[in-house]
Image 1 (tube, rainbow, N blue to C red):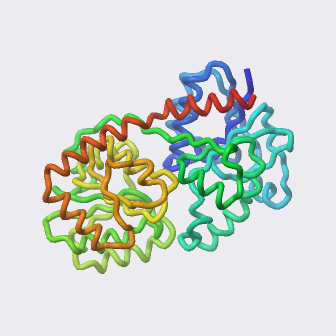
Image 2 (cartoon, rainbow, N blue to C red):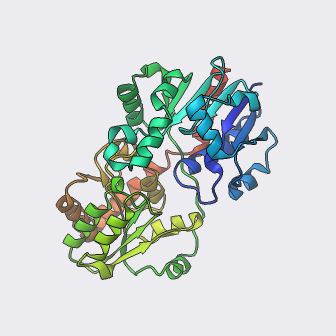
Length: 372
């Protein structure tokens, strides 16, 4: 039996996205499928831990919550500037797992594993603010990855980026795909009324930021001639004001609806109500929303770049994200071809069935056991 420390600082938020969802789902499945090891879930500061995650913990006994009594900002500053305090002083463990990049410092004898979701900040720095660039630089990702005992990459594409951009040996990296959660589908008319959704709509769901290529999505939408609306749903990210200004100046602005936040329990219904998910992102380490939409048999139009062809295979229409005319052509093709819609819906279901959080957790448990 080994003691494994897990960083849960990404779970100190009641509205989880991306990395927080990954950490929550993997940790709960680790506890469910690993009766052999003990897990020390550590956090710091004064923000509460995600309520759903805490409720999920109640069914398990093979863990311990450990609070480091430092304010988060002070802890991060000291870890960045002084490489102090060593986290292993507060959390005694045989192995540490960091589900994402964060500030940390450990005694050199303590092994650790880190999950890498993407290296977009290195591959496409133009999509990040000066503040975010400074933050990523302060994290010292190259140093952390080179010193890690093992790296978990969420896709083969991310593994290639780690090898080429950080100069890490391929044998040090293991690709373990994230999973999908089975979502109970809510009453669709109720969800439609709750969010004031139009009868027929195309959907983009994700952060409102330049990397997600929303402006090109809108340009493509402006080129199609039908009665469909476009729903853009997601939290506001960097330069969201520029994107929203473009939406307000669209000649089809009356057909565009913006949802700033969708409750996690309502997302599956939103996918089910949408005719098509449009997701022409410039870069993704994995790309969870298209897979989530596939669970609801949604046809997908997405980019032929980064990890997206790898994850979606032949179950989506792949486009050049810089070409709004190509996206518009695919939209027209899908909206007028019922046979193609049904074919993609069938492929979507088969593809999404390949991704399970339990499989993710079991592979990570096997990795931990090899290292302890």
